[in-house]
Image (cartoon, rainbow, N blue to C red; front, top):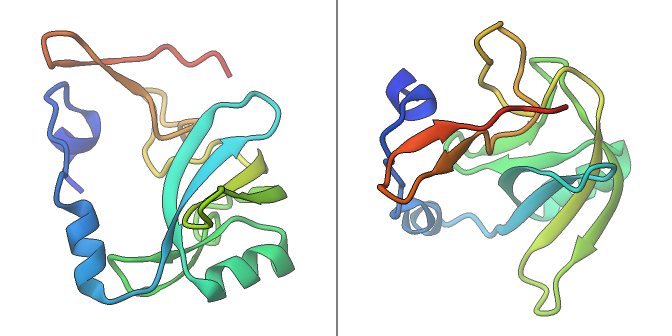
Length: 139
C-alpha cells in the first residue's frame, strides 16, 4: 500500500475490489469487525470456512487474505489481536459480524502520527468536496 493511499487526503476508492476478490475464485463472505464495547466498526475483511472455523476455535478474529490467498489471524505479526466476543450472521447468511475486544494497541495496520497502531481502519472522513480529513480518535 502506498503512503498516499493510506495517509493522504485524496479519495481513491477501489471500486474494483469485489471484482478482484471474485477473480481469485475464493469462496468468501465479507466480515465486519466491530468493537464489542464501543460499537465502533474497526475493519472489514473476508472469511472462508477455514477462517470462520479458526475464529471460533482460537477465539481470535481470523480472515482469508484475498490478496495473499492465505489464512490471516489478525495480530499474529503485530501482536494486536482481536479477541472474539461473538460471531453473528446476517439474514441472508452472506456476511458475518465479529464482535471483538482489542488485545493490543489497535486493529489497523497503519500507525498514527505518534507511531501507535490506530484503533480502527476508519480514521478519515469523506468531506462534501470529496477530500479526506482525519478523524480525531477518542479511544
